[in-house]
Amino acid sequence: MNYVELNIFCNDELAEILVAELADYPFESFATEPDLLKAYIPQERMADCYDRVEALLAHYGVGEHRYIVIESQNWNALWESNFPPVEVDDVVAIRAPFHDPYPNFRFDIVITPKMSFGTGHHATTYLMSRAVAGRDFTGKSVLDMGCGTGVLAIIAAKCNAERVDAVDIDEWAYENCTENCGVNGVAEKIAVHLGDVSAIRGKSYDTILANINRNILLADMPHYVEALNEGGELIMSGILEGDIPTIRARAEELGLTYVGCDLKDGWAAVVTRK
Image (cartoon, rainbow, N blue to C red; front, top):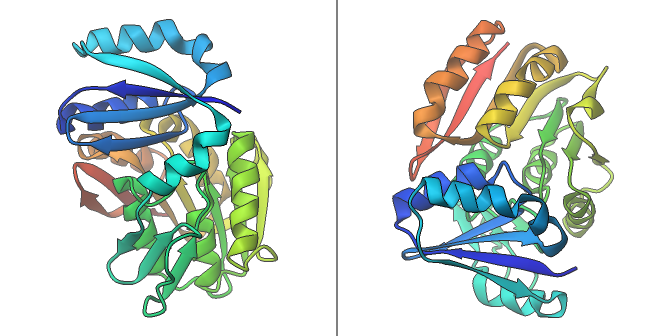
């Protein structure tokens, strides 16, 4: 599968806004460099949203940008040159197979990212990884909604969760998550599902992790609340710090209690409890 790399030349503040906006389209991964945002999308999906993406960039006053086709056979080399390990609070290491192990970290997670979101490089995955690693899931059921690479599901399984469901609407993410669960030795504890929020209908969880984006969180939150056991936590990210009041208001409207939030680089993770 070939991908298109959209290069957008902009400052860091605008890059954060554009990541949140472009996440509503079929872009599967993002990378940032000084004054440059790179957004990756399957080439076959680009035509479906090209006009809307161009209108979005024009709305934010983006001038210089370009589209580069990346052939699939070059993808591994691209990741090896652009995917440094991520260290979360000296507790979680998220690395690729070609990196050296982290034996002194509690969690040494190996991710073959390909095009799935969730390598830890984005602030939201960092925040969610920190939240998951700081909890004891012994005997608990966990849902990783919008699982991407499966990194959060993998950490939850390693935190002794009794059962973990990992759900993503993207087939590439489904395959990648399945692969990563096997690589990290937790495949027997994690059930990976291809689908949207309807995949959890009739199920219940003690903890729900949802690192998606603002609009999907607002739309699907009633389904999360329905599936959440009494006393359970719904932990959400994929949102900017300025979105916290909106997310909190929606959660409280649905009967959840706002517990608190964690912040990094303008992004937020919000914890609520039923």
